[in-house]
Image (cartoon, rainbow, N blue to C red; front, side):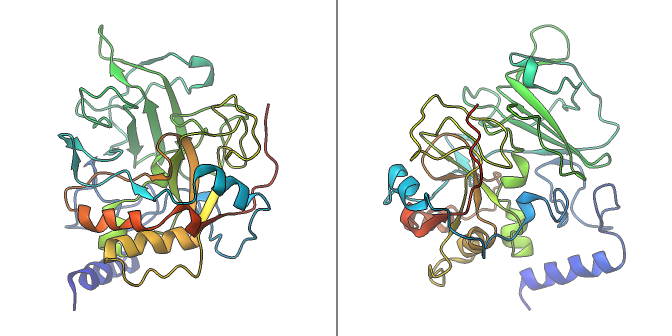
Length: 323
């Protein structure tokens, strides 16, 4: 029996015994740490089963604008895994930390306070920052309060020069037991007004459990002034209808042959066929988001670049909100 089979059987046995449950439930005795940076969630699903992130869209109709939008992005551009082990001396990807319900909450001052949840936020002193503590990029901080089933997300986060608080561009708080969306027109820690964490490819799912059962998150360089459900915000002034709106969902074509890909990549591609990925921010074209982990096989992940934009299709989008 493989190590993966042993791990999966142990997980299901723990679930049957009642030691692995929904958020706020007990963790498996003797399992990996429950709290800390990058710890496994023991297979817990983020948000309810009927949440858009968790819905199987493999049978949904293709949007009439699919061909035009994908052509506008660039049909031969590769799927780019924007995560892995280490890049330029820092963990490669968007990190997260799981905290206790008793974690001290600190004040956060927002540049975009009108569209941010005021907090305070339970940011531990050693909270991992995207790109590392000296990064100048998005500097996301993602915090899961496991005991209270809440997700806290910040972007452009820096420690305040005075006191124990933080300064950030914006922030959002999500109830992990709810399907509630941000107010219409509001951003989050992501341009589309979506949560970031549920869209990350994580080692625990891709390798330990052998399946990713939710949609993933991706970016493109040029987006439209518009958003579609479940996104709540756009981040562009361009009105070209061939540009993709925030919240657009794409999936890998069902007939795309993934059998020759290495195991880690094959699990990710299977998820892209079943759950697809949401356009969440402006960034590199077809850049796929994930959490850093020293156990990723970077060569396996790089094989994803064999997949091109032309191998996807846009799922029916519905009404595009442009104001």
